[in-house]
Amino acid sequence: MRVRKAVLPAAGFGTRFLPATKAIPKELLPLVDRPIIQYAVEEALASGIEQIIIVISTGRSAIEDHFDSNPTLERWLEERGDIEMLRHIRRISEIGPIAFVHQKEQLGLGHAVLMAKELVGDEPFAVLLSDDVMLNPGGPPVTRQLIDIHKAHRGSVVAVQRVPHAEVPRYGIVAPVREEGRLVEIGDLVEKPDVDDAPSELAVLGRYVLTPKIFDLLEQTQSGAGGEIQLTDAIKALMQEQPVFGYQFDGTRHDAGTRLGWLMANVSLALESEVAEEVRGYIRGLDLRD
Ligand code: G1P
Image (cartoon, rainbow, N blue to C red; front, side, top):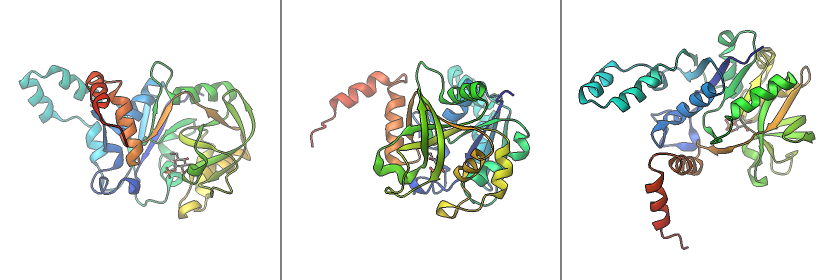
């Protein structure tokens, strides 16, 4: 079955980026000229996804507003003759159909994904954590890469990449059984292990293609690391019933949910944008001596 739907959880507190995220969801922090979540939506669409489902927390409707039309702004831009920006603004609200589901309590990533159960139904789907910004200029988007692996191997697929050993406690870490090119056969999965207990340095990074069986398993998943219902734990249970692969994707990932990662994502994207020349000149002119 084709992967047509994508779930984008966007209901977290954004605690790693306070105070910037006190009133604004982290998914709306800008990268160059558009909010973080718009890059993930664009990646999903460029990967062949037809229906976007965004999980938001109750009372935080700014993300809905971003993807909604804004007739007053459009009229104003039209009157000023700013046709290029008008097109840009209209394109955002024409992305549809975007569905929004509410997560009433922040019980964890697994719980957020579970909120999309009814809208996804009985078909495989993608999950994109938008604060993991995946860049692969000139190549296939990371979500597309996972969909292709799902098609070829008929199982669930998680995006993995090696991270520095000291950073393993921040991630879901896989225990690889066998690696064949970019494909990883997974023996075990552990959410946020201690540095000394980590089975490898291969971290799960923000992109998944999952079979709908995951929803039954999420319903049975008890809270795990950090007292939260973890997607990783449900995937681990899924592995007992169906194949789950890791895929060492082609591309660069920035963790835009942290200050440093956000700054790096901005620099990388700016160097690909229409202000690239000016940014390059600015960086060259910086005094980088210690
Ligand atoms: C989540 C997942 C974790 C994964 C990470 C990737 O953690 O639970 O398995 O490695 O995203 O960014 P979070 O960043 O929400 O703590």
